[in-house]
Image (tube, rainbow, N blue to C red; front, side, top):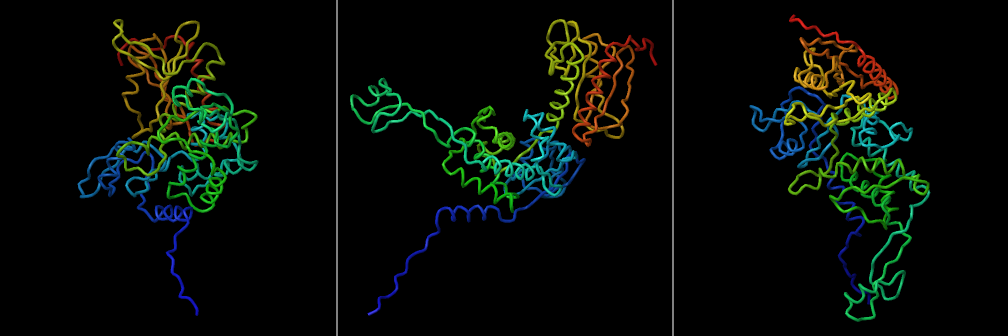
Amino acid sequence: MPTAPTWRRRTVCRPFAGRLRELAQKSPMERLDLAEGSRLLSVPLSHAVAAELTRLDVATIVPSRESGSFDLSNIRKVGAVVVDGTIIRIRPKTPVRRLFALLGYSRRLDDLWRSDDIAFDAEHDLYSTIAQSFARALATALGGGVLRGYVTRDEALPLVRGRWRITDQITRRAGQALPVEVTYDDFVEDILENRIVKSATLRLLRYPEIRGATELSLRRSLRLLDEVTPLPAGVALPTVRVGRSNQRYGNALDLARLVLSNSSLEHREGSSIGSGFLVDLWTVFEDFVGAELVGALSAIGGVADLQHKDVLDRASRIRIAPDLVWVVSGAVAACIDLKYKIEHHGAYPNADLYQLVAYCTRYGLNVGHLVYASGEAEPRRIDIINGPTIYQHALDLDLPHAELVAQVHALAAVIAYDARLPDVSSASAG
C-alpha cells in the first residue's frame, strides 16, 4: 500500500537567505542628486536626513518656507551616502579622474591614481567608481591565490604546540594539566592584508548602487576570503607595509584604505547612515597643493613648512598657522595661504586678504600669495596701502594630472622670485 507523502517545511540555505536579505536591502530607494558648490536649492527632505547631512557638514541646511523642504547651499563635500533610506549623491565639479589624483596625495596612496588599472566611467558617481576600481584591483590580487602569512596565537590546546606559557598555566588552570596554555605561529589566510580588503568589500556591498559586474566580482572575491575575519567596526585602520611578499595586493590595499577611511560615518551610535563615502575637497586640495609646493620650494633651497605654528603678538596670545611658510637662511622668505574657494561675482572673500596681510606683517614680508582652486588664469595683484602686495593665483583643476603638477611648480618659481623683490609697496594713501 503506497504511503502518503510526507510534507516537510522547506528552508532556504543560509548563504541564499543572506543574499535574499541583501537584495531586499537594495530595493529601489529615494535618490537625491546634488552638485558641489550649488548656490541655493530647495529640496524635499525628511528631518532625519537633514539632521544627518548637517552633522556631516555636507552643506548649509535651513528649513524652507515650504513644508517638508529644506534650503541647501554651499555644498562642500562630494561622494555618496545612504541616510534613512535615501541615497544622496554629490557630484564634484572636478572630473573624477582628476579627483583621484588629488585623493592620492591627500591620503598618501603612492602612485595608485596614475595607474592604468583604475576604471573611470562618466556615468558613475565617485563611490561607484571607487568600488569598480577596487573590484578589479582585488580580483587581480587574488588571481595568484589568497595570501597567507604567520599569525601569533595565544590559545588553550589539548597538546603542547609552540611555546608553553607556564605562568598562565598556573594562574588560569590551578594545577590542571589540560588544556595547555600555549603561544604558537600559525600560517593562515587570516592576516591583516586579507582582513583589510575583506572589510572594504563588505562595506562596498552595503551601498545600494553597487550592482552588475562590479557586485559579482566583489562577491567572487568575498567567497575566496571566506576564512578571513573582517576588522572590528570602528577600530583604527592598521598600517600594512607593501613589500615583495604582498606586492600584488598594493593597489587593492590602497583602495581599501580609501573605502575604510570614512568608516566613522557608519559607526556613530544613533546614526541613521547605512553606507557612504564623503570627501572634504578643501582638505584634498590643500594637501595636494601643499605637498607639491613643499617639494618644489625645497628643491630651490631652504625649508618649506606646512601649517606653521606661530604667534602674532609679542605677548604670545594670538596664535596663527599659515598654510605654508618658506624659510631661507633662518628667516621666512615667503608666506602662502591655500583656499579651496571659488570666485563669486568676480571676487574672492576679503577675509582671505585680511588674514594674509596679518601673516605678512608678522614676518616683515613685502609680498604674499593666496592660491585658489579656480578663477582667472592671470594672477590678480592687490597693493595694500602701507602694507604688502598680495597676489591671488588660481589653479586649473580640470587640467590633466601632469599639467596640474607643472602649474604648481611654475607657481613655486614665481613665489621664489617674488621673495627676492625689493619693497614696492606704497607708503602714501590712494
